Image (cartoon, rainbow, N blue to C red; front, side, top):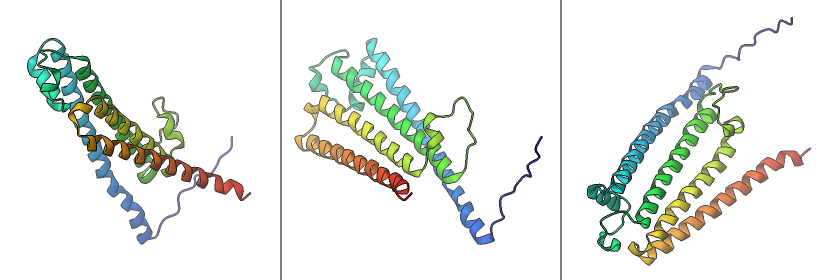
Length: 202
């Protein structure tokens, strides 16, 4: 049985220790994002309850849904119940909330693990698969891909509800989505170059 001496980390000088400890100033930011996620969870259930109530004929819930998705009442031709377009827009709005919540989790967990402190989740059955190899570069690429997914949902909602939008809005949202795509491709390509450069030196 080998007895390996327990090594203690070197003690930092006061100024470096103070600067290094300043990373904990990010903790209130991550706690604030957790509070924001709780608001998203509440909003998700409010919209879901409205959808279920409207499916059972509640006009008040239907009007709340129409107002929240920006669907003009004249566009439904005075319908007294749900139609396929309204259901699709509400479901896309719910998916949008879920994707933004996933983005928040990535920022909270990945950011805390990368920039603040280790969570010591190795071997934990619920450890996210992506967290095992996360770093600032990987986190940046994953966030860019998540933003593209969210932008895609927004663009799809706009196109489905295109009758209620000006043509300039449709063009602007399409251009913004393309800009997100190009930015993500540039980030991924830059990350590939940076990860490949150390291996080319050997």
